[in-house]
Length: 217
Image (cartoon, rainbow, N blue to C red; front, side, top):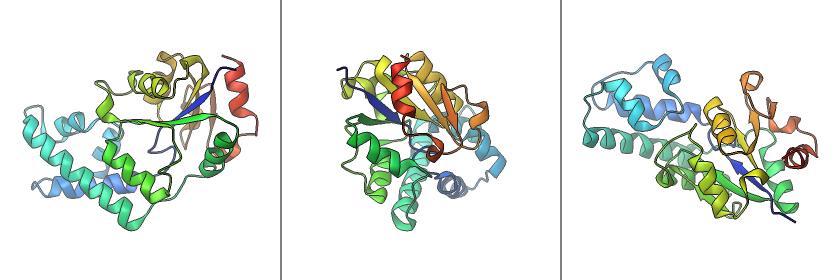
């Protein structure tokens, strides 16, 4: 029997940490004597840090300064996660446990830095849940490039056609398509996500949802 895997995005999929990202970006930018509006933050949410900072500070920001601000932002974010805690989105805990019991491989496939992923898994008490992790440090190109999914699939030794990506963003869903993987779109914008299956929350999925997607591959 060919093994099967679920590749999980983190922000907006396992957890909702948007407010923590907003607070940490706001404070890191303010420390440099500038301001960022919530609308500007929302317009860049989910992008890579280097791209975000070129928008906030202009294209001439030096790599060194960009790295310094990004590191400050991410440290502030991790402090919020570990100090204030964070919760699973609806249905996540159930599916993590069910898939593990049913023999599915599970991996993180995220554009987040590894230190952020470690902080989130620690806060959620999931440090032993996943068989592999692919993070920002493992890829050159962010989503919708499929690289992070292909790295995660390789690390759990499952062919792409037997992997299901769980994502909340159009770029992530497109990356799954390019990787030749099935996808489940989840979140408030589910109706506009071009996934194989889209729901507002994972607790809306019936018990056979993941099995059916793999059988269609």
